[in-house]
Image (tube, rainbow, N blue to C red; front, top):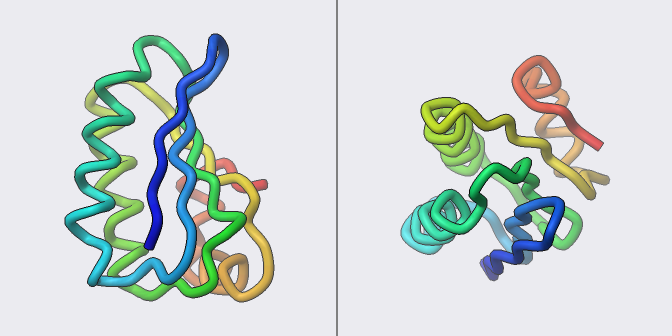
Length: 101
């Protein structure tokens, strides 16, 4: 998995690509820490547009991000969601936990 944090004047984005599974745990955790450290008061977005595969451990990692963000009084939106990634998130009812677009 590829993970890249970008922060602009209006938002902080964690852009993910490739397979998002258990092997990505350390890289994802490091990217989340970087995102939260750089975000300041900006809204957080996770761009899943280039993710080709998502499994249950990835869902757990997204929940971990949500918990860390909530502790920092921030909301997290999932953007660029499409195809099989959207199906997995829909089945898991993540639309009740995240804004998804």
